Image 1 (cartoon, chains in turn red, green):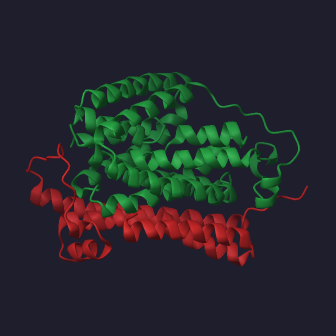
Image 2 (cartoon, chains in turn orange, yellow):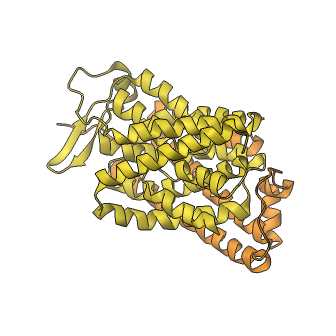
Image 3 (tube, helix red, strand yellow):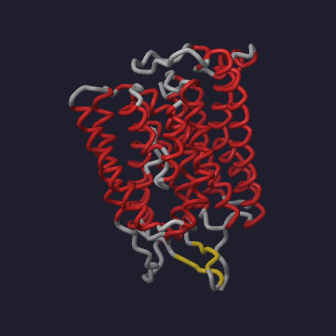
Length: 128
Length: 267
């Protein structure tokens, strides 16, 4: 019996698995570094999350986060790590577009591109 | 930092961190539900991507089913996240409570695991969703059916994920196991694979609206990630049935408490 295909079979799956693992590990490492810095500087301050105020603008947008991480702000570095984490599935989808295109599976290229567009729209515009 | 403990516990449930993290943060640590949902969503991406990395290599994950259903979940998640920014906190808490009660019921009943024996489905054929997985005695082929019903349920799962910052595993079980008749191992690993992308769609909105606080998300994410590594090892040797019932009861109680707190205006 012929096996119904998974795209690219095992090589594709291996690359995909490694991509996800690398993304999460990198994100966790950056968050850990930022977290250490943040706790070292502000660890003794009490936390206050009872009332929702929303984050300052430099922790909300990609340029703002990069800027504040560059300034070695602990919170900025953590946020950069979280951004890397959010980018991991996005990278996975981007990679899938290429893999389906290599298989000439155009139906799935369309599906994957639409999903990618939704993700990019969400991250850049915040759904407004 | 109490949220590290929440992370550990959350991952031990196997129901996904979010379901436990949000009630823990809001009910025990008095964290505003909007921050709690933001931190939970981030941790959901971390654990699902980490676990998916291992599953996808083993060949259980059906990447076509995942990609196709992600159409539904990402649109749903985007809508759910926008809804979350408009809805009052009390309403979010009540919906969360209802979802918890439902999850508890679903987790107590083991999903059916009989393969579909009928004729192939035309949607499934068009989308080439039928596949197979490595079984004990070699390659096991399977067919999936009821694609429109599964797709619609997945949209609901996406909305709930975006609104509540959870992976909505219970609704995904309904969609994949019950409606589409995807084999258990394939549905669990495929839904896990999808959670990262689904959550990323709402995380963008959350980030832009200032729901993701680094000081809170940091311990939650690291705690959950660590907890899931340890939890996976402990769960492998544990009596899963007793464990499942215990957690179902815990979730039932958390759900009731969330609804009460929401209605009493305490959140």
